[in-house]
Length: 327
Image 1 (spheres, one colour):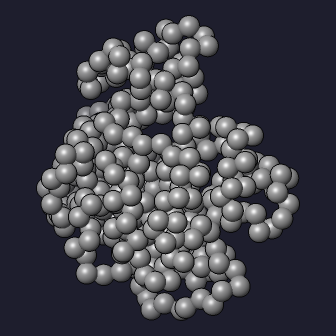
Image 2 (tube, helix red, strand yellow; image 1 turned 90 degrees about the vertical axis):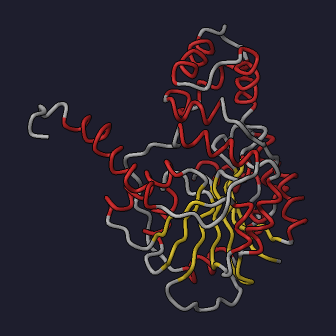
Image 3 (cartoon, helix red, strand yellow; image 1 turned 135 degrees about the vertical axis):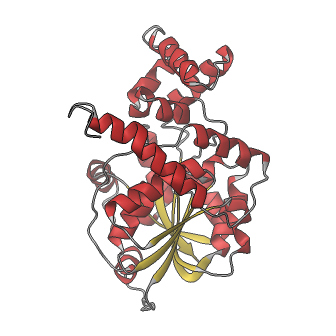
């Protein structure tokens, strides 16, 4: 890039060289399942066109062992020491931010990260390569077909994925079957209460039938910006994802989205034979919760968290992110 000025070199690196490397990686990635479900194909097509998110930096979490995680989530229970490397499944890894954080947090793990989209997987693999991380394997796969895997995992994570399936419970059941008997599961799902403005924006966009192209996304965004103050769809502008193309499509123009309530999640856990272990949340949210429910055992009660959300409807504006295990 010697012929480019210093100001242009980062742009050339990002827009030309990085994309070239991702195409090379995508050509080498292998699939471990077929993808033929109608909704899975539509979701895959969306993320081939708009990988989400295109991130640049990622936090470095504190390192710990799976045994320490188990002791933290299930205090007082006996914890089995597992042989190394510890198997972890990231079901729906997107562009790699989650598996990279997990790989850093648990360096003695062996991570299988799967996704529908080759474009997303290639972005993830390039960033993993750039960061020098060696304990992640990326494969193309549909969660609905992962039952073919002849292995079990100490940890199964599916963050922001199940709500994009035609039937979230069908995918969730398959993930439960892949979990070791004493394994841990991390799930993240959209909140119906916190995403009321997203629903309004999706309905508004659908009524105007914007094309799913960069220009169509821009037209949609400009139309929402031009709405009168107080219009329910305009509140979607409080989401940071509104302001970039890939993220805006994921937010407003997604081909498939389910939203959940905490009582519905409680029902899902019961049907799946899972025990709720607690929600991940900000310090502000946890302080509010403890003020409302000083009993130390309340944090493992979904009814209590539901009361908090009733009082503060935007608490889970990102997602409900929670841990669970087999009963």
